[in-house]
Image (cartoon, rainbow, N blue to C red; front, side, top):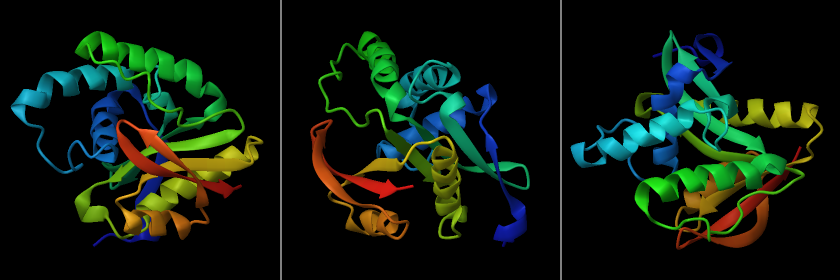
Length: 193
């Protein structure tokens, strides 16, 4: 077992982290677990999505991601950003998906707005879960947002995952509102920074 205090480092993601970021975002969307093998039929979309994560002008860009490493191995990721950038980044990102899939997704609710720091997608490799890496990533980004002058962090949590909501509440998040996103209801939570 690793020593959490000395073996976990956080760093800014790089373009070569794009495939891990894509997997982490897909895990956050419940497409697959971070440790699962990507089915052959999903590989073309995964490769396309990896390209989106490699860009610097999308919601899921490496520029908006922090990576957790243990002994040089990438074990977790958190995609997050200033809500003031959300509308423009969303238009570009969703447009790329719509062009690739032919499915209109831009009609979904707005996840974030100016004045918020949005914690979008987070995932930790199965063997490293329960050790506080997720909380470490979240606190790191929340502290960064606070130092940058943002006073509120927000995120969405699936209403069907009360244990996950309790996890976020343990970090100080409280209920803000219900949001319909991609056909499912989510609780939008907020936390003062």
